[in-house]
Amino acid sequence: MPKMRKKSDLPSKICAQCGLPFTWRKKWEKVWDEVKYCSDRCRREAKRQT
Image (cartoon, rainbow, N blue to C red; front, side, top):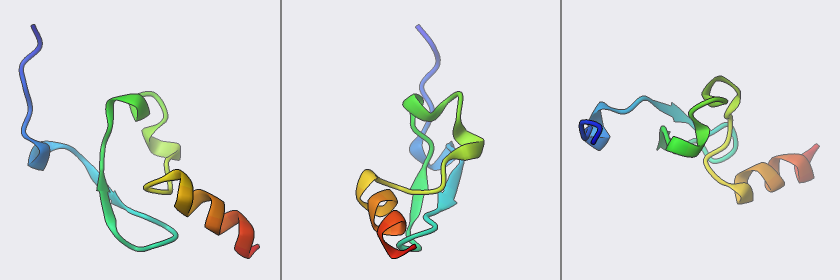
């Protein structure tokens, strides 16, 4: 089994829409550099404003 990591050891970013910090998720492993928003809701709101 892979070694477990603490959540505080994972990389994090600031959401471009709401400004809150969010941490790396396994499903974002291959596209982490492209992730801008913490959730689908923030992504929808950003599209709505433009």
